[in-house]
Length: 339
Image 1 (spheres, rainbow, N blue to C red):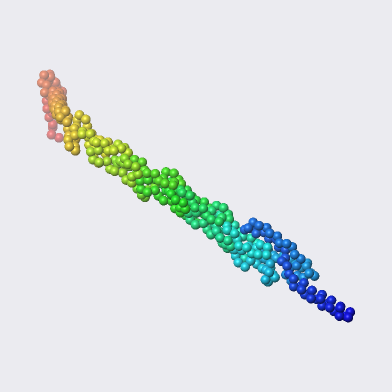
Image 2 (spheres, rainbow, N blue to C red; image 1 turned 135 degrees about the vertical axis):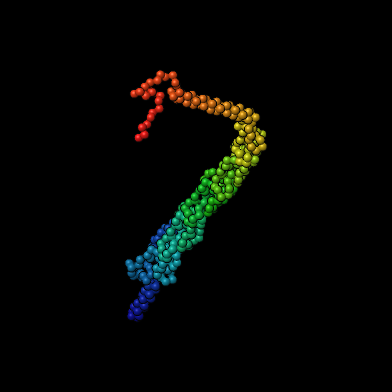
């Protein structure tokens, strides 16, 4: 009987040992998740996978980036990208965060210029043109305000529209040139202003220009200037043409009336002609000039005759006493010997 009692005790002890050897608990794990900004700590246990009540010193926590799998009784990595480790589980990355690798401890925030608007994202999306994000961990991108634009993706800011261009809506990818007859004088313009009188702007130009000389424009917001008409003159490009005076000339494009020379000329149709006073003065002046020339010629002739008379006077004088030089009279003609 004693042997039977001892045998029954041994059998009971073995059964209990086998049952205890199959009993497992989750090991102690402490992991911090960046995406959820949560630190979780599991309750410590004295047993783990393949652990028994007789040897608890060999049980260790699952390595970072892995979790305890209740089915396999082993530490396993998160199976897919876009997940992060929490105690005993893998969780999806929250919006604004991502994780491209498997078995990681935490998720990463999206960089500036990128965003993530769904959970469990393995990558972040670039902000489209016309929008921007200047913070990390963004869930969405912000549209460029009116007067600003960006033509690039993943922008962190928007640029103001240059002078002469405008943007009157949000999310502009490019600024537009103001329509013909209008301009934008400031940067980051939301609308255009019409050109002032005396100025114009074709559609391909960015700024209004002053009308050329001989042209005018008295209306606001015009594309072209008008040529000053005939028989009018335009001293300023922002005033209406002025009627030409009756005694002046004003062809097309005149900036001032043109007059004939006063007193001496007068207007005759489209030309200038000599005035009567001018004709009389020319006749009198011509007669005086001709008389002066005649007097000058006569005086010159008289002077020449006087000089000629003086030159001949010594030869014609006969009242000199005859003189002799070696027996030859002074007035005698020389006689040549023939050699």
